[in-house]
Structure formats: C-alpha cells, structure tokens
Image 1: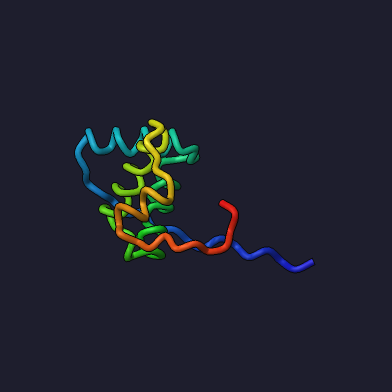
Image 2 (image 1 turned 90 degrees about the vertical axis):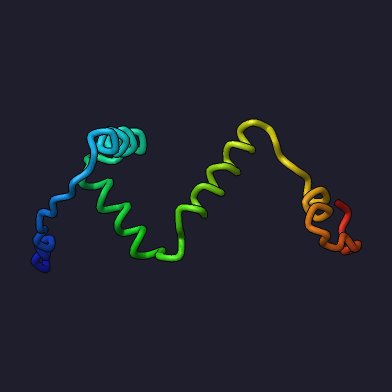
Length: 95
C-alpha cells in the first residue's frame, strides 16, 4: 500500500474586521453548514480565485431573482420575450 501524502502545511493569516461584520460571517458559515469560520473563509477565497469575473452585482441579481421566485413573482417565457422584443416565431413544438 502506498504511503499517504501529508496535507500541505497551512499558514495563519490575520484579518481585521468590525465586530458586526464578524457576526455576519459567523452566522453565515454556521447557516451554510461549514465546520468552522476558517473553512468558510477558505471556501469564499477559493471561489473568488476560481471565478474572478463573478462580482457583487451578479450575486445581488441572483439573490433578487431568488426572492422573486420564492414570492411567486415569476414570468412566462412569452412575457420575457415580449419585454425584450425577442421574436416568438413558431418553432414547431407543441408548447
């Protein structure tokens, strides 16, 4: 059996933030099921590095969409096409 590799060595990084922001961080990692604050922060930083084009405006738009869905404020594809002046030519499907 091959010898297992040891995990990479970790370095401690200190970050200063307000108590209010830290409370938000703590609530978030607990609500999302992370095992620790550090695990949550590593995941957030990893996502930021993997998806640098994903920004706060994108997140806010997605969250707003989720709120609309949960509140039952949805639109049919025909309504959206009409709002954006997209052609609704028949495609041969029986929708």
